[in-house]
Length: 315
Image 1 (tube, helix red, strand yellow):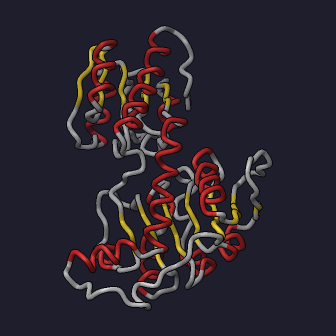
Image 2: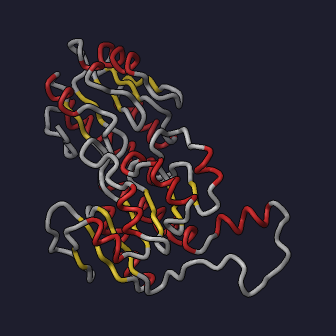
């Protein structure tokens, strides 16, 4: 099998992939639609990731490629229906990303509610004049209510940390009923009603057409001027223009973001918002986790090459 890996991998993952397949590794530039189409024609298998444009048009010509072993849990950069119609199997790497992504959510909750990024900017700019009783007063985390939007693997891991680590009450919105939780939580079937109950809301739903702009102006209003929004899912789940307006007009207290609607572009208004904590998509950015993701993608490829059903098959 001739394999294309669309981005560099960790040393351990690279060695394991090269030990098993004839592999070409690209640089850190995402594939354009034309490049994705060419890759599908020229390779038997591809390990793609976020930003690679595997659109319907990319699958228009009969592809040589038979499997896309996606590097990452999210795969909204791949047109799943077009892949299936072209006979291309798609897999992902779901379980290995859960804990690291949940950890980043907690990082953003703490940084945003406690105004840590504002404080660091003040200190680095030489503007700190010393401690005083009313400086950078933020939101108290312990004992507050967290609202989880999407109670899947990652949503559960976030809620478990919030409840067990900070004694937070958990409410959540999920499209289907959830009853098998190992921590106390209350499902609220209406998203806006759930947001109204939350001190901080965390977006943890998959990306794609069904969740695009799930969080917009009405949801910001439901969260309210004392509420905080954290997004570790996909950028376009939150309507960025509505978020900027809510931040600048103080319709919400603050936001912590690891993802953006048009990555890597981040609007100047968002960069300038003092009540926004912004990270450069660090969700799974540890060597251990990125290695595990590469090895999980490799496991799917090996299963496919050996005629077995890949364990993380999406289509």
